[in-house]
Length: 224
Image (cartoon, rainbow, N blue to C red; front, side, top):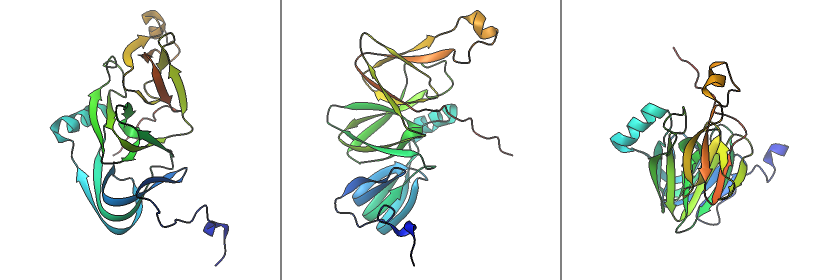
């Protein structure tokens, strides 16, 4: 059988090193030798001797997901083998976190990560009155984290002299040591009259970077 479909760029090869690699721009391959973590429902294929187990967040984490619609529902993958992960054909990027680093990522943008990384769901300071991104996952430790993004992300440097303002529906993540606060770019009067539709943003200050996707969150479709 012959086809461009069977070209080397599409063919899955045997892993040569353990851990996470980019299979292609839309998927991650993970050679498991022990354990790794991934978002629930993101596994698209696997081979070898692997077991998949849902990981709970505890009562607090479940409450946060119920309130915000966000959060990080995880599964543990254990054993020896290879697994592939993707989510709605979004673009995949691997971030290597070193000891002492701290990265804040929106739960909807996490695909999978090494077990050597620790994460904690925290309230985004200053975003209490916004409609999205209230709770983000802060990753620390060392290891690789696979991040997904709808489209090609924009990475904007943040400096002490130049704070950055981002739409909470478009932000993917930022350097965790940046300070955040709510910023209103329109007067109350203009909001009542209709305004621009971009009334409130998250302001980030300090030294670091912020990652923004080129689209806003699509509201969930009504069911029933």
